[in-house]
Image (tube, rainbow, N blue to C red; front, side, top):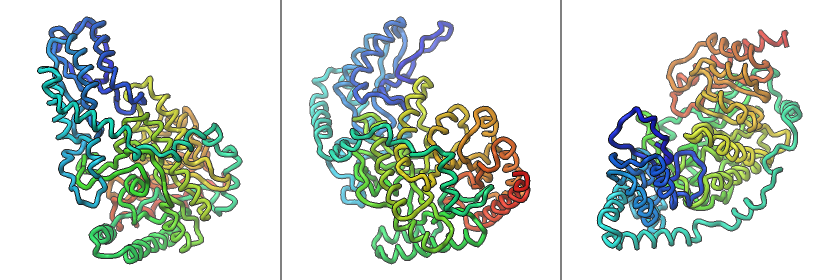
Length: 539
């Protein structure tokens, strides 16, 4: 439960309740100092509700969703206030430790990751968090003198982190302070941008086709990355292998008739890690795996300081791909909100501040892609809705800075440069107005899995810019027939204007095999051709 419990109706009976007292319910934008006072405030709230005199309170005082050490003194202050209002106090984590890596000590001191001793002193993984729970329980039960050494070491680490020059970058903070209202606005409205973009891209008037970005990551691609990491091949040999795969992907897309191409992303290990590895303020681990979904595990990067992009991250790969074809190849970037949501985020400043820093880093890459002649740039935000706070009354607060960050990352381009974005998960009906406010020229959105369920939301709210509702589910190896995809496009065209619609898969193709990818994309391109033939006379 969240840190603010709701009053009981009086008809239920329970022996204990577990509450999150970290002051950081997932997704909420709270001051980083809330934790210091949250326990005392909630002790008063519990007292105002009549207390929990004959019940157990499992006080979630150690953050179970992040990797930073607990402020033990502040937690003890909070726990002592809570103890007076409950029959039995149990010190606990705020949530399951499923969300944190297992053991900080499992990280090799001399490994490839750059998790040095200074950074380690600021962090606690699951094993260390259990230790913090035990230390706090001992402090509550036996007094602070019983944990004096632990308290002293904890204060020293916290002071070290607060005073470290590694967490602050004056250049980044000066840029943030200099932002004004114009930085997150395109120079012209969409209805003026669209003809300027279409005029130079030579796209079909109806149903242009594209993909979301990634193509299958074969064993050969993964082996090349592994061999580079192990020193078995040098950078030039690795680059040659990646360029060969890029050319294969480009030629395939030309052959089947896609209108807007991608380079396939063979060089990318992960859509967040790849960019984080090239930014200052990030650190990475070797063994800190956590479950993402099902049997899939990830190693989330850790944002420990101000974020800065020192140099170009994608320009060489994209311009190489563009040199192979006359058709437009779009630049592919991960958006600031997704970079934030799929990382462990520093807890010594508001999340919105970190997101703005990420937005400026992505903005710089967008500008360099545009300067290199890239005419379409896709900035993906699959985690936009995922970041919504649990409490609905905080949605607007979150969406305000999240949408601002996306716009900040994309608004610096000319009218002629097309900005696309991709969003996963199909339940967007309750935030459609905010999605419209992103002002992307083209929104590529997951829709096939739900059989175009979003059509009901579009009927209710409409959508002004161009949109590509996914027409086949990439989460399955099944190859959808052409007519099935054509039917989905017909359904979309009955709700939205045909000239708004793009044709694309639900998501990236990284996890799929080549045979099913080949067959599915050929059917998708054929479905787009069918719809053009059906609807061009009417248009």
